Image 1 (cartoon, rainbow, N blue to C red):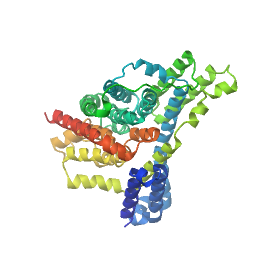
Image 2 (spheres, rainbow, N blue to C red):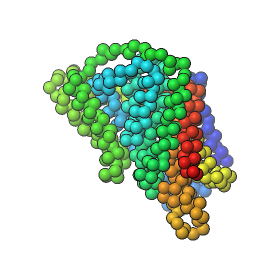
Image 3 (cartoon, one colour):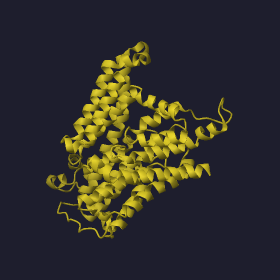
Image 4 (cartoon, rainbow, N blue to C red):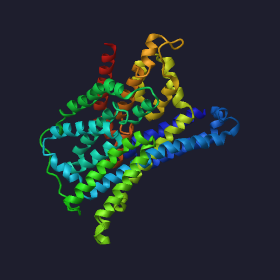
Length: 449
């Protein structure tokens, strides 16, 4: 009964978020209410789910507090990362730093620009990550394209490209990073195995979107801005420092093994000090127009709170054991491991891919040759760099593009551009699905050949 109630609350909350415009309800309070209600139901009815058994002698509420603290730590990692990245991007924007890049994009052909943006987002996300890449690319598009109706197609393509680009490197997507840290995959093997399917996942939507009528012809004239901007020296310094701070994050994580948000906040601190130093001779009124404090006021806080609500809701389902049961159900009822991974990829567009992948990592140990009761096929599937793990990295990383709230990149784009869930579903989901299934078919074809 409690399980059904939890699922019902999640489904109703999800539907309300999807139909926020017809219902005239903002998605942020719905997401927050859904997350808090799920945890309240867990607190009041968790004993009926036998969670008190897992709690042991320490007591049920102590167990629940521990679980909430653990999940809140993981969620805060993402939120602080998001806040740091958004602040750096806004600081660069205040100085007009992105104008340096936009002036380099000379093409006025809509299709040419689409391919440039898609390829750039794809490779940027492999070095940075899909979340940071999306924030940077959407900020660029705001400068390049004044027509919002047209711009949304480019933003949707950025989400698809960033997720595809993040899947094939250990630092590009959180699920690939999880598998890399867990020892399921190694760096060169995941690049070799998933790069080509990820390319297909990008190219197919690009080809299809290029044929749409709205992408025909030339771009409209860009709107000129009269906002105060820095000198050319200040633009270059802040742009280079901002990009260096973003690139520094994966390096910081690799060297220190600390959470990525700490590298992002360290980068923000360095950018902040740099901005203070290059403007120190100006009077307070002039300095305020370029300060990081002003950049912080431009951040879309509702989108951050929306992210918090969604992640808390998913974590409640994980603690209740619902996601683990879902993974077990797939295993028992389907049995075909490649098909299971494809289904998990589709589910990752509805439910956060992190707990789904974590559940699979817990269900299936990394096998080695000679393992007890393990057939050669099972070893080929579940060994380090085995098909199951590589295919999981691809599907869980790119499947989130099927819906706008299925990935961190999508949620960030949704927050910055206020993209309607239904608009994305009508206009981008079929493109993302075409790329997703085409890339999956390429991976399986290469594996079985």
